[in-house]
Length: 254
Image 1 (tube, rainbow, N blue to C red):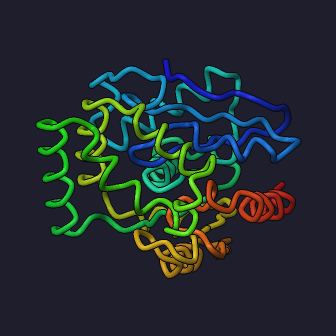
Image 2 (cartoon, rainbow, N blue to C red):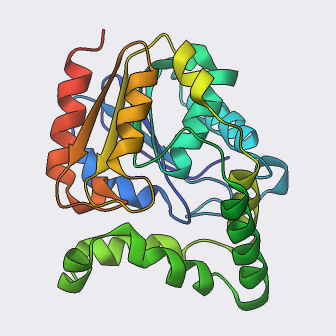
C-alpha cells in the first residue's frame, strides 16, 4: 500500500509527485479548501517502500495509484501530476479513464524521451547505483527552483531537498527506467473527454511554457497557465498563484 497524504473533505484531487520527490511537495496545496487531497508516495519514494512489482513502468505506477485511490473510497477525482506525475496521469487516462473528472498537468510534457534523454537517464541510473541517491539530488535540485528562490534558503528549498533525500536507490533507478520507456501521450490528450489544465513555470528549463501551451491545444477542453517567477516546481515556488489557477479551473468543472 502506498503511503500518502489524505486530508480535507469534498471532491477529491489526486496529486502525483515528480522525480525524485515525494508527496511532501504538495503541502502548499492543502490550502485549497473544499477538496479532499490525496497525495501518494510512489514506490521507493517518501514513505512508500520500494516494490519492484509496482515500480517497473509508468503503467505500473498508474495501476498502483488507481488501486490506492479506490481503496480510499474514491471512484472519480481530479488527477493532478507534476513532472513524472504527469506521465502517470497520462497512463491513468489510458488505463483507468473513468477515474478522471478533470486533469491538471504541472510542469510536465506529453512527448516521449529523445534518444539523448534516455541515454542521460541511463547514465544517472548507473551513477546512482554506484554512488547513491545524492547523485540525483545534486543534478535535479538546482533545476527545481529559480536561483533567486534557492538563495533565500527558506522552506521551499528545504521541502524539496528533504523530499529528494527520502528517495531510495531502487526507487530512483526504477523511475529512471520507467520514464525512459514511456510512450508519447499526444493521442491520449486528444482523446481525453474531461477538462485539462496545463501549468508551467515561466522559468522552467525542463518543461518550458511552450509545453503547457501545446498540451492545452491538444486537449478538446484545454487551457494553460504560466506561473511567473517559477521554475520546474511551480506548485512549491509560487504556491499562492498556482493554487488560484487550480481553484479557478475547478470552479468550472462539473
